[in-house]
Length: 86
Length: 270
Image (cartoon, rainbow over the protein chains, first blue to last red):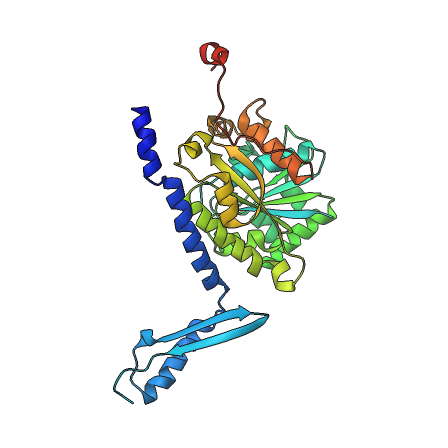
């Protein structure tokens, strides 16, 4: 039986490996969020309000992110306008 | 010049107070003058673990609020020379501590010639935990090889790097150390528990030591004795190694692999 368990264990991924994989993804995600400045959510809301004055957009269609590249901080705004309107 | 060391984890129940008590006792045994402060206002526990719960007259909040001097409030340990405990208040709430008040207590301890001030943080990431880490020069992050503990430790590392005095004032960053507690090499080998290497890789901090899961930790707390003072048990050995490594000694890591009991021990030992 021990041999059978061993062989089955090889095929199934160990729970410790699952834990590590899940944490790797989660921590990377949470670290990037933790670094984002506190004003980002509020700024996003205000920008949305301004845009909504002129075009009808879905809230989810505005993405804001702050990244660092080669020593420069890049504020990226990505807005998808609805189709067929304008 | 006193070094301020916070013992922190985010998650509760991982061994912060056990580690604070043993780490402080171990440093004092080496001849340093050590104060260990319980920051868990409202839920004090360090006095119990250190076995001085009946000797608390004044507490941390009394000192912060000017109702007692630091000398009146410090409880001298009866087993280890140079070891002093400052208990948390059991009756006040966490708002009784202020950043200035805590800073003043640390200044007083510096003036009194203490070498190390160990801050035993409460669980969580709220005010109490942030006050415990604010003045830290070094941090001992206590983690269990378990998903939620690793995640919470990562959060606390982020707070150490953003909200401590050193981070805000742009000084050299807090020196971070990992203490991995409740480690069970049998379960690691069976693939049921995160291995030391995995936790170190995930958190990306320097390992100070591994404390194996052990019945002796509960036994020590039952009798109010820091486990490091229990002779001849693995948890005590592990904490002694941790103190030695903290003081710069180069000691190989232990308690990482499954111990094979000798036939003799199997038959005649425990």
